[in-house]
Length: 415
Image (cartoon, rainbow, N blue to C red; front, top):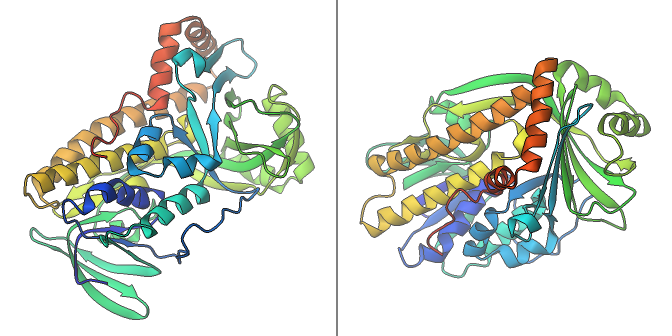
């Protein structure tokens, strides 16, 4: 571990590791020294074989993410275990409105991709460990005990291998998740709004091929998403995200697997086939959170530490990656101009750019959730008319599809 780095990223999850990968192609050119600090142990063996898990949690990647990961050099390996979303089917249970999107109609190979989180993490960390430029130190397991930003250099106290180190950096990134203790210690306040809902997440086996179809189904109990996943040991899998009122989550968790599958089948219907198996059921409360400050001199709050959305539109990680893209560009331009990468005026420019995207994405996610969670029959009729009208309008579907695919946002400019 060095006593000084240009950039210290706290959190080696998908967001923090993606930022390192975004900067690796130019790190040598701009003499960037980077430390990635992760609290959990990370295997250091490069290229270890991937062991898929039936119960693995997954993430839906927007189609536009492909260009980002191509630019970072990880796409070819990543796609070994990606499931393309070739069709999206949106419906409102008990009503006539339906919208269908097809990749072929939009002139793309896929509308998005589903990836198991631990595969994405393994690919990113392997890529970092294989870098031979000597620009990145992967420090784990280690924890950051204190961060003290200043107008000059940010001070950190890092505990690693039972010793404490003083480290300085031009710029520190908090990418340590929605429960960031460092965010709290720094007095960075955030707005939080409970939806009084839980997300129940599980993998489901079905009795027929999923054909690359992702379902978004709105029900009287809450929206449901069923995402196509990689077939494992001959079982066709789909990833379920079921939004439920707080008071109902306990009852569903207490059901046997057979009872749960029957309840799910009754609520979702049979358009995806017959559900034959359910894996481990995870759940977490749903809140809308947004950090009031996302930059200070020498400091950026990134990913879930900066914002968390309702999963209804599947945009949380994609919004975070757009933040990664903008921040990487900001760091590169600062370096080109000979300005400190922790310069507050430069970081304010980044924050202003991100706030517009965050507000737009949060507003879309929040309004969609409220519209489709309202039991008012007039609103229900309006939803059906709106879904049906979109299905009949190629232009409306294309605009919706491009937004969902992330094609209205720029990709990484500096490969």
